[in-house]
Image (cartoon, rainbow over all chains, first blue to last red; front, side, top):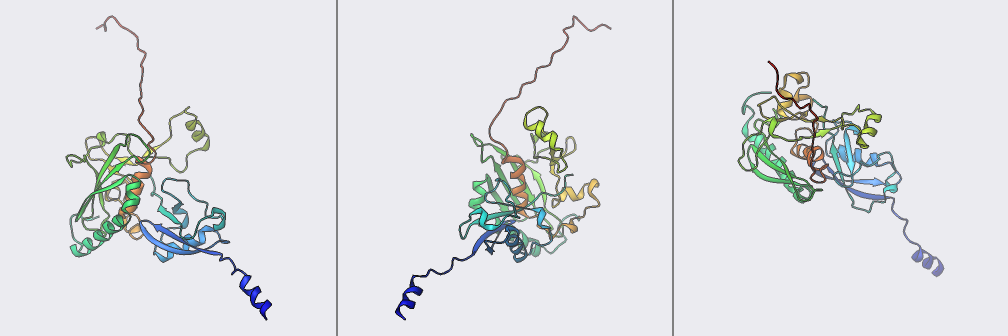
Length: 99
Length: 200
C-alpha cells in the first residue's frame, strides 16, 4: 500500500496538451483554448466564432505574433511554434480588393 | 450611401464609442506600432501615424475618420494636415500606401527585390487632381461612393469587420508606415542636347 502511495506521489500529472491563446481579433481580445497537437487554424477558427467574426473566410485573416511580422502558417500544429501558455497573437483582417 | 445623419444619432454614437473604447483598450499596442489617437469627439476620430522602424521617427500620415451615420453608412476617411486640420489633396500625400496586387508575377517580384525594376505596387490612396485624397478600400465611404464601385455595396461588407477603426488604422500602418525603415535621397539626371536657340 505504501509502495502504491509513494508511486502515486512520485508520478507527475500528465502534461496538459492544451494552452490558452489570447487572440486580438480585429481589435477585440478573445481567448481560446488550443490543442498543441491540432493545427493553429482550429484555435483561430474558434476565436473567430467566439468573437462573431465568421463572415470572412479564414484565408482573409492574417495571424501574427507581432504586428508587421511574418504571417504564421495556420496548418502547422500549435506545438511547433513553442508558444507559452497565455501567448498573445494578432488576428488581422486583410485589406479588401484594390480599387 | 446616404448623406448626413439619418440613423438615430444614439445608435451611431454608441457604435462610435465602442470603436474608440476598443482602440483605447489597446492603446499601448497601437502606440508601439506608431498609431496615436489625437482626437475622439463624436462623430470624428483623428489618428496620427508614425514610422515605428525609422529613425528619426517620421509622422507620415494623419487621418480624420468620420462616423456620421455609422454603420448605416461606412466611415468616411480624409487625410489631413495634423497642424491645421485641413484636408489634403492627392498631390499633398506623398507616396501613399503602396500594396502589391495579389496576382503579381513571381519573376517580377524577384527583379524588384534585386532592384532591377520598380516595385509593381498599386497605391491605395487615390484621388482626382486638385481633390481630396481618399483611401480606396472596402469599408471606407469614399470607396463605396465611387462610381467605379457601385457593384460593391457597403451592405455586403457591413458585418465583415471592414470599416472598423482598428482595421482602418492597422491597414494604414501595414501599407504606409510599417514598411518605412529610414530616409533616403533620390536624384535624377536627365541628359539633354544643348541648343544655341530654338529656330522659328
